[in-house]
Length: 266
Length: 186
Image 1 (tube, chains in turn orange, cyan):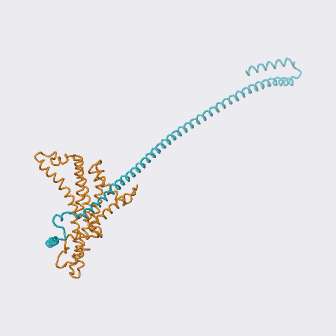
Image 2 (tube, rainbow over the protein chains, first blue to last red; image 1 turned 180 degrees about the vertical axis):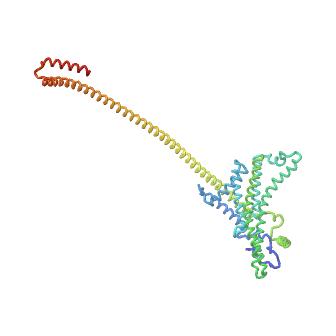
Image 3 (cartoon, chains in turn purple, red; image 1 turned 90 degrees about the horizontal axis):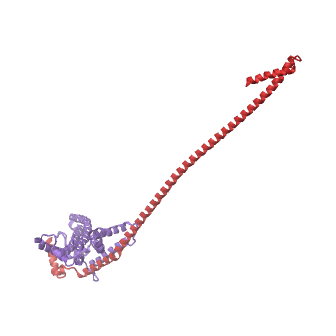
C-alpha cells in the first residue's frame, strides 16, 4: 500500500512514469515490532513448504490423491533426477534432503512474487540467495577437501588433461571460477531474476493503477494504464515460469557443484 | 526517466536514511537471520520427515506391488497345475472310457459267441436226437409194417383162396416174398 500511495502522490501529467521517492521502497517494507515484512514472509515460506511436504507425504498412501501425487512428483524428481541422477546413487541420497529443502524453499519464496496479496519474492533480497549460495559453496568445498584432500585444490590449480603450457592459465581461471564465481553467480542469478521480475510487475501494475485512477485528470490518456495493466498480467505468467525455473536452476547447479567435488573424475 | 530515478536514488542515499557504502551491498542482518532460520526449519523437516516418508511410501508401494505380483504368480501356477490335473484326468477318463467300451465289446462278443455255440450245440443235440428218434421210429414202423403186411397178406390170401391153400405153405411163401422185399429196401 505504501508503494501505491507513494506513486499516487506524484503528478501523472508531469511525469511519464511515477517513481517512488526511493526505489528501495519496492523492497524494504515497514517493520512491525522488530519484524519486517520480508522476515515474516520468510517464515511464511518455510511454513508453506513444510505444510506442503507434511500434507503431501504424511499419509504414505498406496494410491495417492492428486495433491499427494503432485508433492510426491516434486520430491521424487529432486531425489531421482537431481540428487541421485547428478551426484550419483551412493552420495546423492545424502544430499537429497539439502537439495529438496533448497528447491521447496526457493520455489515458495519465488512464487511469492506472483502470489496475490503478497506480491513480493523473498529471494529478491540478496540476503537469502547469498546465504543459500554460500551454503552450497561451503558444502561443495568441504566435500572436495574431504574426498580428495589437498588434491582438490591441486587439480583445480593444475588441471590434468590440459597442455602443460596452458595449465597455469586454465588453473587460475578454474580457481576463480570454482571458488569465487560459482557462489556469486549462483546468488546473483536468483536474486537478479527475481528483482527484475518484481520491478517489472510493480512498474506495470502500479502505473496501470495510477493512470486508470487518474482518469478524471487526464481523460482518454488513462487508457494507456489499461495497456500497462494487461502487459503486467502477461508478465505474471512469465514470472511463474521464472519462479519455477530459477528454483530448479539453483538446485540443479548446487547438485552439479557438489558432484564435481564428490566425483572429480567427471 | 532514468535521470529521475538515479537522482532520486542519489538523493535518498544522501538523505542518510538509507545504508551507504559497503552496507548497500550487504544483506540486512535481521533478514539474513530470518532466512537462515526459515531455511533451517525447511531443511530439518525434509531431513527428518520428508526423506524418510517418501522412502517408506515407496517401500510400502513396492512391497504391495511385489506382493500382488507374487500372489498373481502363485495363482497362475496353481491354475496351471489345476489345468494339468484336469487334462490328466480328462486323458485318464478318455482311456477309461475306451477301455470300458473295449471290454464291453469283448464281453458282448464273448456272450454272442457263447450263445451261438450253445445254440449250435443245442441244435446239433436236437437234430441228433431227432435223427435217432426218426431212425427208431422208422425201424419200428418198418417192423410194424412188415408184421402187418404179413398178416394182411395172409388175411388177404386167406380170403382169396380160402381153405384151398395150405396155410403153412402159404406163409413160408409170403415170408420168402417179404425177405425179398427187405433185400430190395435195403
